[in-house]
Length: 136
Image (spheres, rainbow, N blue to C red):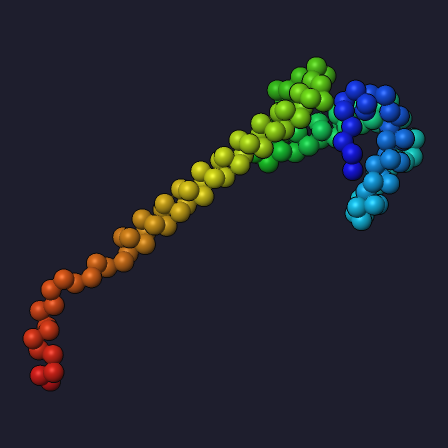
């Protein structure tokens, strides 16, 4: 599926975009489809494919922010954010989450190593009972 630039998205009607995307998705064999009913886009206020993609990106931003922080974002001035701004914020949050997950895994591995080290007895270097071997 060919990616469109933001400028190209601004020139496309959302239904035309949906039809083109659905054709590409069908060629890829995915069952996902975008709505092709013009009323869907009119009721949502999407005049262009850019508006639609921006709306989807805002939903994704809200979801990943909630996953990362436990609550929905309230501090973004979304009316002032472009699609590029939203995509950049999604990327930043995703990178931060990946780094946090790597650090969490490192801490768990370090704790497991310390527990294993503390609970594994050191081998005996001197066995006082060796002289008794075979006497009983």
